[in-house]
Length: 85
Image (cartoon, rainbow, N blue to C red; front, side, top):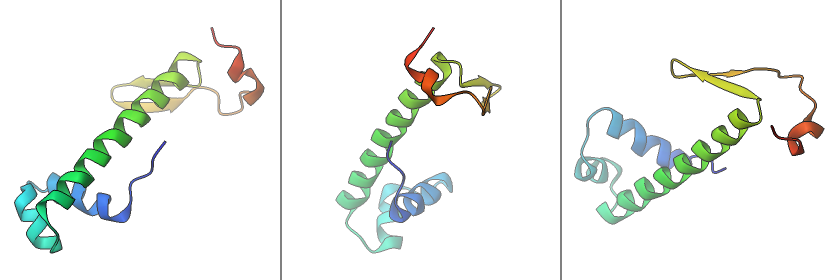
């Protein structure tokens, strides 16, 4: 699972503020292609996280309700990971 770099976090923050890719590029004084590559990386990492969360949900380690992750049993024996439902 990939963790976002500081640069990716900054780009994501600016995009949440409603800035365009061009605006982000200008603000960070970096080429638009660099910002676009970072966005592609963010998307890939988000897909990896989605897959990991789905697996944890499938084996009963967490649930998702109303957009919130809840760990069902934080004490669950990690050895049980190989024994899925």
